[in-house]
Amino acid sequence: MSDLDATTPRVFLARHGETEWTKNGRYTGITNLELTAAGVRQVTGTASQLVGPKKLLDPARLARVWVSPRKRARQTFELLFSSNSETAIDSNRIVITEDIAEWDYGDYEGLVVSEIRAGRKKRGLDQEKEWNIWSDGCEGGESAEQVTSRLDRLISEIHDIHHPNMNSEQPADVLLASDLIAFLSYRNHDINEPGFFLGMSLPSQH
Picture 1 (tube, rainbow, N blue to C red):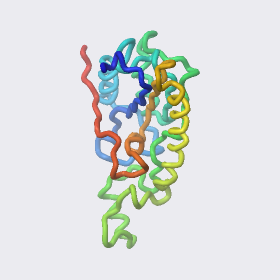
Picture 2 (cartoon, helix red, strand yellow):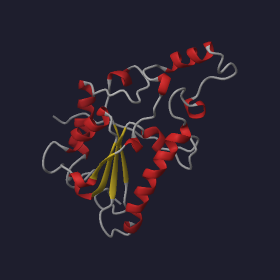
Picture 3 (cartoon, rainbow, N blue to C red):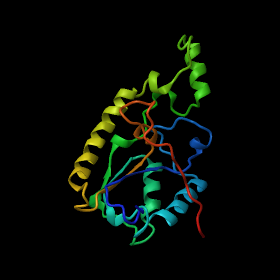
Picture 4 (spheres, rainbow, N blue to C red):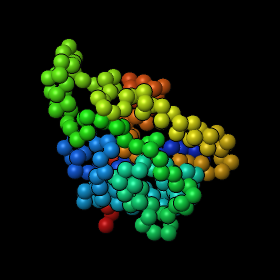
C-alpha cells in the first residue's frame, strides 16, 4: 500500500534540526537554543519534499500535533508547516506541552559524555562501569522513570485518538515535534527493543 492510500492512523516523529550544541554532542535539555543556518536548511529541505497536500505529511490528515516548548522544536515545527496556506495547521489541533520536552539533564546540561564520565569518576562514582544515562540517570535532573511517566500520558492520548479510527472512520494521523525522539522510539519500556531505527533530513530541491 502506498503512503497516499494508507488509511491506518500513523504517528510521525519530527526531531529538531541542528543546533550549536548538537554539532558537538553537548547534552541539551532545558537550554533554549535556536537552529543553526544548517539546521534551518535541514528542516526546510525536508518540508519541501515531505510536507503538503497528498504528500507523506499531509496537514489535512493530522488530527493532533504535540510540540515541545523548547525553541529548537517550535522553530522546527514552524518551518515544517508555516510556509504557506496549504501547509498551515489550525491552532486548535496544536498542543504545546512539556510532556515531550527533552530530558532534564540537570548537572550534565551542556556537557559531552566524556566530561560527564570524567566528573563522575572524580566523585567516586562508576568505578567498575561507565556511566549510562538510561540506567544511571542525571544528577540534579530527571530519572528515566520520570521521563517515561510523562511520555506514557502522551501515548495514552494518542491511543484515544487512534482507537476509534483504526478502520479509516476519519483521518487520525498525529505528529510529535520534539527533542525527545530517542525515548519515543522504544517498545515495552525497554531500551533493548527499538521500535524503529531510521532518521533523515532531505536536501532542498531549490
